[in-house]
Length: 279
Image 1 (cartoon, rainbow, N blue to C red):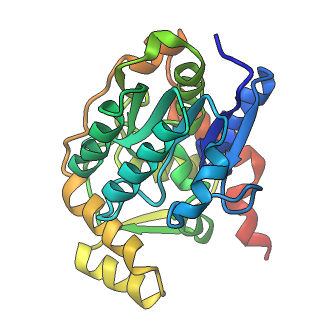
Image 2: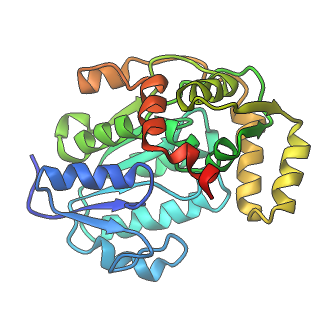
Image 3: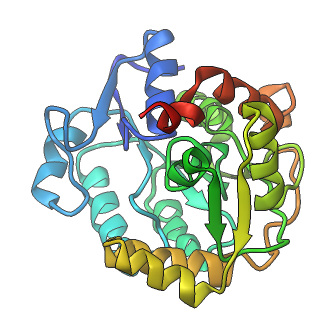
């Protein structure tokens, strides 16, 4: 299906990128990891780093950090895609945000580039509780968020990675937009309760007004762009617009998507959520 040219995985050390790299390597597909720590180094905010990582690659997995919703993402994605076209890239697979209008503007850049493309839309990951900003609260026994009873179709990063590998290496996914969801809807409180059950710990969930939440983040020294992003996600995107499931993962992978219980049980067994208790 693929040539001997490498596939570039941007964010190749992140939640989805790392898992994509592992799967491609297991299939003996040449891989180039796009990150600041690899050589050649890649930095979204330094266009001089782009030509080296794009040189000679067949396809690119695009995962923009921190999110396609931030204001500068549109111009950066546009410039990057133009450079990819110039350097002979044949296929783009974009990780996008489900229900995010700003992300959809970035999708249009990829769709209109004249290359083979696939768009993968997802919302909150299971791994936000173990590899991202919810982890500390879980370890400390209290998760505080500005969201109450909205239900979300939490998706496992393993499923996203498996779909992404198919899109990067198989032609039948060209020109498709996939909405990737887990098998059921959960509130954030229910997700935390599930983690508490599998860790056999008391972990509380508290809802606070958005203004207080953002003020606390600022006091903790959270970067302003991340505060702005979370304000957008919690105020606009978390309004129930994503409270629906799709069959895309099951159709693409031939199995049901990974359930949050399965994820929670596996992660609890690793001891990660108990690590702060021994410090």
